[in-house]
Length: 135
Image (cartoon, rainbow, N blue to C red):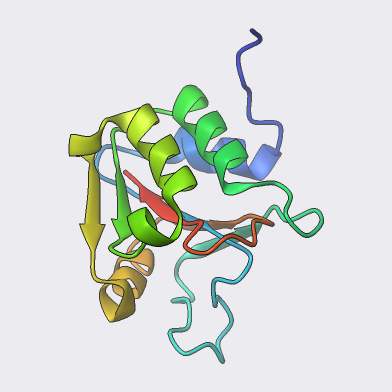
């Protein structure tokens, strides 16, 4: 099987610049990132929209590629993900191991953590809780 590579120039640069302990938020298409959202994205966090069409790219596509191409050691998810999106939760467990997938309170804690990330990468995924913070 061919190794996955990051073809998006800006995403490749972001991943290459991430250092130990820094985080990258992978967002689904419904993640509120505008200034009028209930929990607006901090303007100091870089925003990269990689959406192409509804449902593409999927959360799994981006996370698998980043896990293979980058040096990520774990993930942080909203506490509701295992029950509401078991398929994508399973992908994270497969990639990082269950002990390295940590859960936190969704609102406001998850949004506070998102605002501490180096960047937000918004996918076209329309799944419930199809999002994670990669460390």
